[in-house]
Image (cartoon, rainbow, N blue to C red):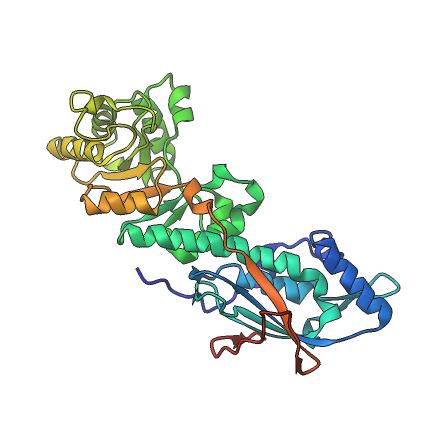
Length: 365
């Protein structure tokens, strides 16, 4: 699947940044705020070129957020406590959200008085690192699924404050749905979901009753998808739900625990790993639905999926229509580095680093 680069940059207001705290270095490594204080106290205003990069094949995320930080938070405090903006004195070139980048390729080029933005390095690099990690991981599972929809379901696996930007990154990288309104907020969408185990439990373990209630309230607003593993009998429950909901049911979601074997496979254990959601279980559910005239009902597979596992399911031809992926999309790292490479028009960088030209970077107005 080819990923489409987002050409229109997000407005700084979208990010709802804690501007005053970022300006004051609250979220910055202290040595950067100390450096800014030294430069200001000494009256030193070096014109530097700084370049940001990372070391993997990746899909760039967080660049608009990083630019917003520079736009709103570069500058200095006046003696009276007011803020002197620095953005107009900086020249910034950057790639776009969703650009595929090579190891060590500059994704952002900053030029200007270093004392105006020295305190921001921690914050903008953190945005780049987090969002690029999510974009790279989502792109990997999207490619593995070979065109089948990926649902972005990792909200419960991390702090709620990261949801907004993570959801945007997943959206740009190709996920077709996110699970919270916060994750969908930057493009004006809504979170989607399935009839959860908790609601089923609230209906005394009756999946059909819970699904019927859910559909009565939300079938006109979203695709109704029902978890069918509450009683560890996914075939029977899928059929019961499909019979009861009819055209209101979009799909069933298989989510059997990796430590359990679904009842449909109890007589077939021995020739394959029967635990959790596996291709054989998907085949049994698909065959049962089709045999009962429910060919239109989709199957969503979830529970411990990552790119490697999706590739395995696809290679075996498992009849999965969509994959729900959670914590795997937050694993790993995609650290960024920013280096001063020129000072006052002359090359000046730490050993092993230097200025890297790029004709892909675009001037940020």
